[in-house]
Length: 221
Image 1 (cartoon, helix red, strand yellow):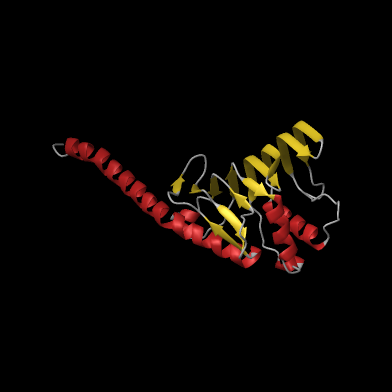
Image 2: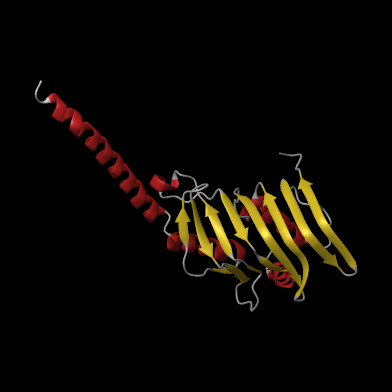
């Protein structure tokens, strides 16, 4: 009877110690498996392999849990290998990962979010024209979602679209569509996309459009 109160007093401390150990282990795993440098190196290698392009990011990358496990890479830019002008620059690139990455050590990207990117259409077209023919089987197996927030699109240094928001269910559809455009620049066939596109302003010659919204539905899905 004398030892029971002491046992009761020790019980909460044991629980707290166990919880602290679990949190510490989870924190160390998060630090190890979501090291921004490791993920950046992976993305850069894939850009060179599949796109023949160079991906650069700024310093001060961060990772976090909310609203999902993610790594935020500042000031990313993508340019064709050897090109002077980048195809895309952005304020940040957020890479969402599954929680399983904490213990598996494998990066299965769930979502990419580009914040405030600028897309240079001239650089994009030059990159597409210089790319060699790609067979469908050699296209990257890209199945993660893609989101673009507050984008600007340039043509010959002039803004032709701004405040553009894009949400796509699969970035792989974009890769296939770009290959289609590269193979046949005159093709007017729309890509099999699922998602939405919104733009506050679009300029094409004398044409001015405001408040443009498109909902995309691929019937094959």
